[in-house]
Amino acid sequence: MRWAQLVLAENDPGQFDLCFWLDYFRRTHSDGVCLSAGGYVAYYPTRIPLHHRSAWLGDMDPFGELVAGCRRMGMVVLARTDPHAVHRDVCEAHPNWIAVDAEGRKRQHWATPGAWVTCALGPYNFEFMTEVHKEVVAMYQVDGTFSNRWAGHGVCYCEHCQRNFWDTCGMELPRTRDPQDPHWRSYLLWRQERLFELCRLWDAEIRKVNPRACYVPNSGGGALSDLDMRGLGEIVPLLFADRQGRRGLMAPWANGKNGKEFRAAFGRKPIGGIFSVGMVYSQQTAAFYGGERAQKKVEDHTLGMYQALVEARIPFEMAHDRLLDREHVGQFKTLVLPNIAALSDEQCQQIRDFVRRGGSVVATFETSLYDEWGVRRGNLGLADLFGVNAAGLVEGPVRNAYLRLEKDTGDRYDPLLAGLEDAERVIAGVYCVPVETTGSFPHPPLTLVPSYPDLPMEEVYPRFPKTDEPGIYLRESGESRIVYFPWDVDRIFWEVLNVDHGKLLHNAVQWATNEEQLVTVTGPGVLDVAIWRQENSMTVHLVNLTNPMMMRGPFRELVQVGEQVVRVRLPSGGRAKSVHLLKAGRKPEVIEGNRYLTITVPAVLDHEVIAVDL
Image 1 (cartoon, one colour):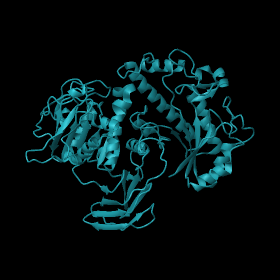
Image 2 (cartoon, one colour):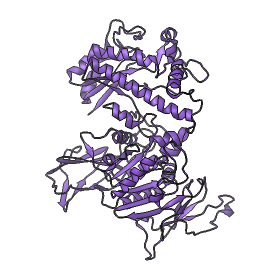
Image 3 (cartoon, rainbow, N blue to C red):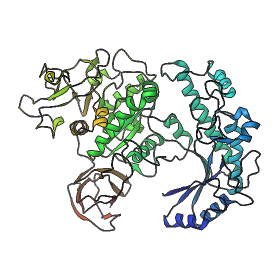
Image 4 (spheres, rainbow, N blue to C red):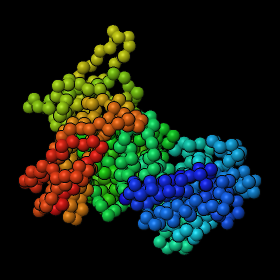
């Protein structure tokens, strides 16, 4: 359950304290470890020509000593390799192993003089590194190998890549990263399949040596990953969510998001999630609609929606856009589509089928306006669900656009406006899809106040304080509910973190889901809430994110939050046998009745785990 990674520097042999690290693994109760073995530097007595031994290695075997010590503690051991660079002698002996830039120059390493960047798709990986992996597994019988920086760095124009790409696709390598360039499209798919082929090769060769071992690639996951997580999930048995630090504006839940994205593509695990809400992420939208601007056009929408759900304490999972069939999304009541712009006809049909089975949808901005290749459609692919047609090009950036809060004919506010009743209007988005209605929307809770000048100050007033143009489209069909925001509410929430936008997103998901959450948590602070179900138990995990450094940089200290009241919905016919707070090591105050448990958690410092035995 707990993994450690020890990366050796070249001058560590003979200098690092072996006993210290073995004791560290023991003190941290680590069950598995990833240890530096070879690739750029070998930390064992390799017999492979040109496999660079550490200059400090001598007749030592630090990797072997670490493996033996970890084995004595019953730990699982992965051997770490790094194939992304080589030393000068390798470059001189095999210049065709080195990556080449668009101008035909061999790539020197950007950080280390005298080192050269390898081509990930050619014989260095497919031949040389295959022998390295086989040697390590044969000599030490490790449980597998793990590769860092194995997938290359940008487009390589070496002779192997040029020839292999031409043989497969019949075209030259791309000179642009335009998602609509057929050369770039073909390259993305070719490179991906070439790397999958490499994964399969390394895994097969390792298993020939040790049938119990496997190959584990390092992969970041998520919409911005350049490897299809669905395809990767079909090949490898294990991935690590590699999120080692935070920089810029980056929430502390980023690691949890990465884990959910992996789980969405990797299918069932020994512990299965039970969630009413699944948020879709789309690698094809990032690649073929976002392109080089995928962070702002795609990921910022996802991050804004994610932040809103965390703040609302709504337990949710991630769903992969290429796994929208009943088997993978049937567990959800609501699918959330944060600007999932690029969807194929088949994917649109899968979403319609989800709705026909009683599921609900919350979608924003350009969702379904493009096909799977990022080519704009004449209309929204889900226009029939949303009840609107696209009516022109995206408008924006706009300034001073607002949304007016409207009451219905009974002088009541719609549930979508809960918590906003004291506001007359809220800020609208920066970009908006103009639409024309095809259904009936008689009393929209939000109506558009058109944009007006922001300077000079004397001109800053609305020219049209009220219109009938909806700022949101709500529909009901049987047990299904559909919410469509034609503007970038999720992206603007991530950029500005305006509380009104967060409430709108929270309320939209709750209204669409139309059932009480599996778990509700009431109390101070910002908590990330998750719940799992096993055959005879339920587990609620509360992670305390309350901190002045929440959105940027490392935490300086943990800030404890006070009492949390947790209400858990029990499965039909289930009763609680016992309830424990695992972090606090005590039994909490519990009230049981009418299929619900109400549990009082006195305080949360870093996290608390509520274990309910049924």
